[in-house]
Image 1 (cartoon, rainbow, N blue to C red):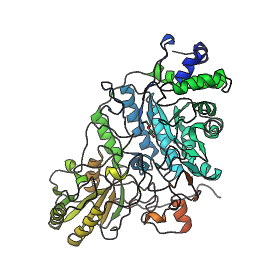
Image 2: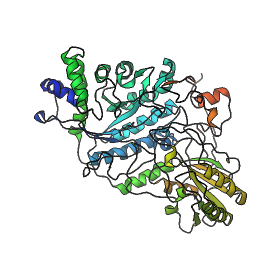
Image 3: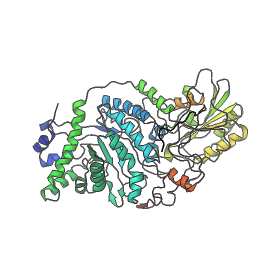
Image 4: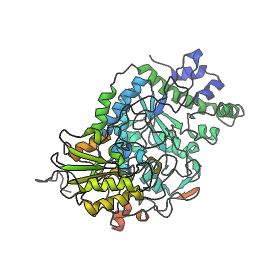
Length: 555
Ligand code: BGC
């Protein structure tokens, strides 16, 4: 059905217009019954749906859904088409759940390995992040469901995320922190953009006319609406004037009244409010008018999540120990073999309908023993667990240690203070190396860690946070059913202090981005600095030969 949006806006009262510019609750826009204006439901995002259970009056109780590999994983595929497939699967689920906008992708640049939310983000490289974001958005939106690319802009830390100012030159902003958004807007026209909590050069993103209007709309031609991150509004009237259309989740009517007051006293032009309402209504109807029921099965999506994870894991080292052979005696060590860490904490946390661990997914006839080795949820060396694990390793042909960061080490809401694995894990790995030379480490983490034993172990598989089927993907790679092909979308420095942001990361409310454009590999390459594993690194089980290379141009 065609809707005449300007005519609809003309029929709304000032109060109704102000009301439409903030949420009805945590996840819905307001309705206007007398004009038949429907609600739009939004859900996190990005790597699966956190949709509130309609049976429960609790915004944090979500329906069961499929948890796909997190951004840190998918990025390592370097494959925008894979991101598109993940988006399409999430879009189908969203449509079946009645979700109109998925809150993702999250494309902030990984300035430091410490950012607690790096696991959701794609890369230190804006080109890669932008191409993947465009793929993901095209996938979700191919299902008639919108996206909200976030967090716009320069939100590369969690520390004081609601007040800190990311201070940088215009060149740094434009070359490093904006291009992922720019590429995505230009290539995939997301239905919405979510502005971030932080300030940029002292101005709140939610009040920045430069970001929300001059760059996003005038320069890039963004057509959808801008929503705030949850609670990111400081001065609502300034926000409307700057181009922030929808406040989420809302302020119990307080800010709506401020908008009404500002229009009445002439400090906000009503035409600007009308434009915001128009943009919101266009998207509400874009969804409502095209919404037809969609079917999906969680089982099929679980398999799709596994296939995506298989394309996203990075083989960092293999001195002839992988793939494993079912005729060998293998010791799996570490609680992550049984209960893998496959997603991060915070707003992207999915209530998974099922999970697959590496232990659950062994090939037939595999001779695998299991020992817990260390408590996977904290840093505490347990002598009894360690002794049993060392024994299991000694009695096997090869040991595979499932190491990684506990949930409490990295999450939305706070940053890490160091780049190390729990010391209990590092200690156990060294103890095992004394009895078992054929030791392989599988890593479960959302951001680089220091690897003090990397010269001693014979194999390292970076499994990242591979979603609910990630454990099955790990086993299939370990046993050679799948050839690993992921490449690092971020540098693994030798140690934290090598990172270019080290001296200025997350310091106080004014965060100086003094390294400028020298983020990630741009810095390490320019400095000719040795790193543990560079951006783009990743092995496979095969070899490649290039031949007959030809140029198609003279110059
Ligand atoms: C997060 C967003 C998320 C929103 C809704 C905020 O705290 O920063 O990424 O979409 O909550 O859950």
